[in-house]
Image 1 (cartoon, rainbow, N blue to C red):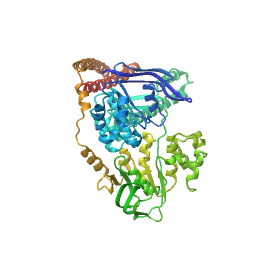
Image 2 (image 1 turned 90 degrees about the horizontal axis):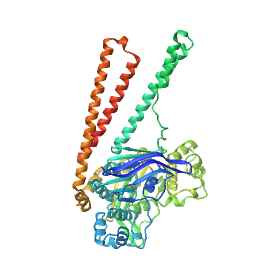
Image 3 (image 1 turned 135 degrees about the vertical axis):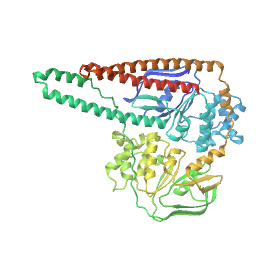
Image 4 (image 1 turned 90 degrees about the vertical axis):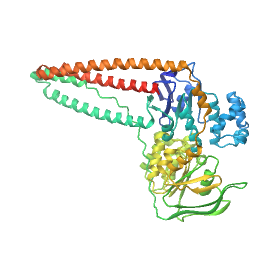
Length: 590
């Protein structure tokens, strides 16, 4: 496999906070890698350093001459006066027919090609930027939260492309389902380290949990042995007849080394205060029409919602999901018809524009304390603040100095503390890391109030939704099935599409590439044979020692015991190496 990118001894700090500490990484051809890590761990910073937008403090980031780098960042400046086609032609240098073909894969066709970028929704602008990147035919591309503004329909189109794509990519995402469907390996950025695991995210998280559990058990065993030996030393150290044995035990204590366990990051566990609930009807609308004075988005809407339902509002970008939620929140007046909430309803509303309404002169702690009811104590508020990454000195910050993402997280924290019976949430996960998204999903699943929410994060939706409302083609209706059925039907509606770009890339594989794969397999098989011979020799030596022990246990010395233990350890290491090489061979033979 050709090497595309190497990172050696990478160090990067911000304001005395070390993001990377002597971190190493190598990316080769045909690797599909999901990148995970907490907010602030350095995921986006790593991408910016790779493409040269930021510089590392020390260390080497080497991009090989064969590497064609593509980068899709979270926020990119665009010229709002350009049309879609003009933007694609300018940024890629391709002919207009080539641009139109790739844009068509993301359903940007006909009049949309001539539309001004400023007139498109954030989701459609992301489709245009994806098209621009793919037109450059990268063999290593970096996607920073590509699903934040993509509806599920477009996510499925992107997933299809990524699954079929034969080159390498790294994707930052907080959507576990998206990573599961697209990535074969997992890169975690945590506590300054880069850990690349050669399996998908679910297997990595399970492996990480097992390793931690094993390390804790092993260390407890070592502690017990150390205490036992120390008791002997303390008891017999000053007795002449036992002095030499005591010294031997002291040396044994020094040799017992515990496994190094880094201080684990605090686990996110969000608890939303319960609210008083009743059974029965919560909401009803009849012949409701929504939209703006000059445009009806949807009409003839008739719906009932029961108390304590968790309602996912789904549909493609631009169909009217946010317009519907804004109408229910009272931010837009209905154009026709009527709707009614139960008389005891209390609301909390979160949307992308809500953080801008925060009082800039308030401090973080003051905002949270005044937003929470008096029966919620300070400890509960501090826990909620910490789950949204506001700790210690952060609580004394004025809202005016917070970033957009920090303001969004502050709004979410205060909304969850408000003890509102109804939560209206428009894309609440966009500024949260992977772990916090899943913790928020679990908290909302357990919340005994009512939730109406918009999200394109499938893991999040699947964990919460008990009811689905679909917004499509001027209609808002209750979807009759489950969320899994909704996704399945959506995939079927997309249907098989001939991906000419993927076909072209696959056809570009030449004989030299195949020959290299054949040579790589030969080398790996030689390594495998060498390890098998080594394991045979180790087992032979272990058998000799065991025969010696069985023949005369009295002559089986301490050195023999140690040698036997060393042989066991070396055998296990060789077996693990054998498994790794065998997996390499299987991947090369695919």
